[in-house]
Length: 147
Image (tube, rainbow, N blue to C red; front, top):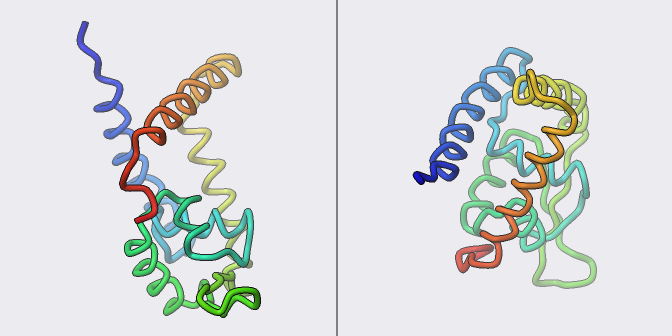
């Protein structure tokens, strides 16, 4: 039996990033899907350390830092020293970015509709459970995480 799950996930990831970026541009949102992953994590919890954000996004600290530089230059995030730890920096959303969240949420909903067109609720639940299990498997074997 030939197993193509990883290859298919990679293709879905690549194509969905292109579609998502196009939808963002069409709605005047000037960040890409990779930056959106960072902003999405901050919309869930604002004012987090770079280490926590790296863990949430699964980006290496060096990749995350360069992406945060670009987001800061574009006025989406700001860095502040942590009041509890002089060595840590906390990442916060700007008010300008908060105003984009509703548009971003609509694009995310549109993407979900595209992903699951023709799927039943039960099929979606089974599929997402399988993806969570795959993610857990990979996380157990990930030595690159948050370096």
